[in-house]
Image (cartoon, rainbow over all chains, first blue to last red; front, side, top):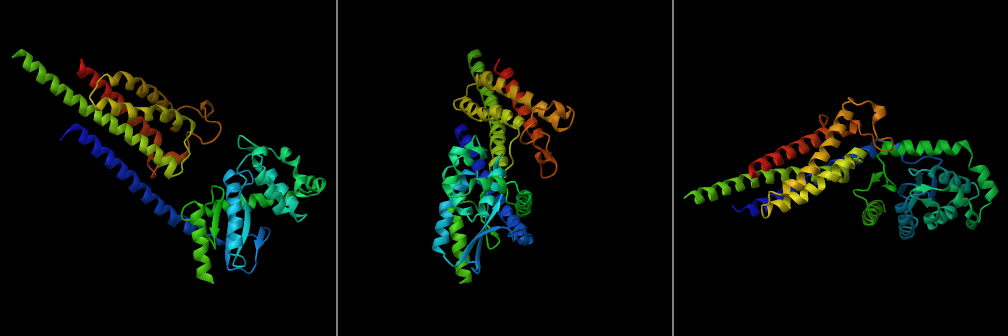
Length: 216
Length: 150
């Protein structure tokens, strides 16, 4: 056999081994994630969590997110679109995983805005202006505070309400629940308690559609 | 007659060198794919020292292949320094992992600790030890090729 054949066969074998190991690992991980979500279903939704959509809908999408996370911002319009497509049949629950430095203050602003019924307006503004207030993956709450009034909120009240110690408890509880459920990245989605088989728009849409058709 | 023996001797040496170099390349490829599997598939975050070792193993997977087709034993001259520098990082990492260098001396203050328990595969194979084995074998084989080529 020629030497070049040896090399070619070796490359082929290594590629096959890599792909096989990946498939083996992913199938094991998927089972583990499903088991985690099933065993910790009480950790998915809390009474204090922000909710949107029909409360009686039979499909619930739980999103663990971070206001400073770029992918969360990019997914947001897509999640809204899914909510419109499945109007009345699905609802949304927001949980916080502020992994980025400074992001817990952004969550505090969201919770303060919630007291003025402006949660979604402020979240939209945060995602739309994310590039201006995140510098090298560090959230700059003071920068955002400079133009939060664009969301139509009472800024003085936001500044006061965001220091509520209850907010830190909410964040800690959400982070603890995320850990239990194996949500270690943002955004992490659960549809009726089921985690995405793999991350992506299409996978999220497929899972939601299959849950809708199973329940309606 | 003498010339003929010299030619066949050289051919034998070339074949032996090629085999050794081929094994070197296999090790470098296994280490490259293995480390990518740990980080990209298993989701382990590489610590600072892991990054330095990656920097010195990845080019070996490429230049050793170039030395194989066609056989060019001068590749040892370019591969050996990379392997030796990588080996130094690996020795440091292994000592750190087993606690032979005190914690306060380690450079990984932020992010993932280089002495983390997560570095043990399947409960018994520490990643720094795998790296030590890979660099160690590559260096020994490269030195052997250098001796043969003389």
